[in-house]
Amino acid sequence: MKFDLSDDQAAIRDAVRDFAQGVVAPQAAAIDHENRFPGDLVRQAAELDLLGIVIPSEYSGAGLDHICFALLIEELAAVSGTLAVIVDVHTSVGSEPILHFGSEEQKHRYLPRLARGEILGAFALSEPDYGSDAAHLVASARSVPGGYRLSGTKTFITNVGEAGLYIVMARLDGEPGAGGISAFLVESDMAGVRCGEPMHKMGLRGSSTGELVLDNVEVPEQNLLGHRGEGFKIAMRALDSGRIGISAQAVGLARGALDLATSYSAERRQFGQAISRFEGIQFMVADLATAIDASRLMTWEAAAACDAGRPFTQLAAMAKLMSTDTAMRVTTDAVQILGGYGYIKEFPAERYMRDAKATQIYEGTNQIQRVVIARELLKRG
Ligand SMILES: Cc1cc2nc3c(=O)[nH]c(=O)nc-3n(C[C@H](O)[C@H](O)[C@H](O)COP(=O)(O)OP(=O)(O)OC[C@H]3O[C@@H](n4cnc5c(N)ncnc54)[C@H](O)[C@@H]3O)c2cc1C
Image (cartoon, rainbow, N blue to C red):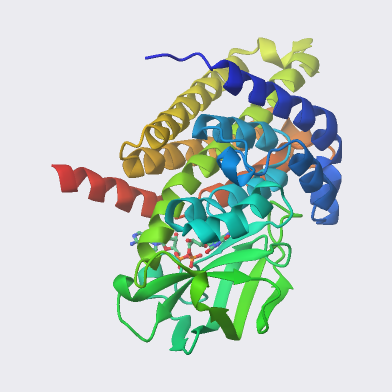
């Protein structure tokens, strides 16, 4: 077992770190404050070939592995959870399903544009009445001559209004259960595609989140992704690798918050000395650093299993559970270490904490991660 990064992996980490620290970090507070979608940063990320990191080079991607993907997302999240989630959703659940389930024609039609950042990808599973219980979703697809007609409302969709392509899960011809769901490639400019008002979120402000309304959208036959009835399977496979990204995002947020807290504690003086000299603070940062390292290793273990073609559903769920709970704990304690200054917007501690909360909720809440882990364990046991 090797814990060292390969040359490619180290190069990606260093390049993204330079971009994140040099270009993204100075804008992160303003993006949050103004709730502004960072289109310029997304474009710059595309110019650095960061939007198709796991897409093979034959489809214009960088052809790198999921450790590189995790490094990319961690480095971005360490300075901006917002940019991290935009890139993460685009890359994993917004593009990867085409790689795994698309026809060769679909791959050539969409992956190069996604990899080059000409269009952003998005993933539309959740509905107003069906979140965790996605197998019962009600958005409908009807077979019509030449294709399908889609209707329904998706909600909480990341990159909504910014994406050029939505991977939409809908129930085909009223067939019941998870096996009645199919996946469709829906372009943003197809007639009948509408985006709702942006949702005003606690954190990850600047990333767009909201409803995607499908009003009798005519989708051609060739835009069925995978086979009829395979949509739920496609969604679950997408979420498995998506959780590697969310786990990495949580590690990045936690690392950014801990870096802030440790440097602040070395500067801030109370009772005649730096607060970092108090054992109460030292034990806190020691515990936080330990939890972050454990989370990163679990993220990389899931990524390595994914790349090796081994089952990784349980590993990804465990990594997501561990890392996102860690992120919430670290960011909350970082606010505590900054004291009153942690609670005001002059310092990014409170932003890290607001951003971290979402990671425990999306791509399956942490209760659902436990359901997944237990199911995988008991299946084998
Ligand atoms: C910022 C953000 C971005 C998002 N982006 C996307 C996106 O791009 N695409 C997309 O499709 N969705 C997206 N989502 C939706 C997200 O995946 C759902 O919010 C999530 O799956 C939970 O669904 P829900 O909100 O309907 O909560 P519910 O399913 O109603 O759950 C409410 C509570 O009940 C608990 N619960 C539910 N079932 C169980 C159970 N069996 N056992 C124990 N507890 C349970 C949950 O854990 C939660 O605490 C996003 C959400 C957010 C907040």
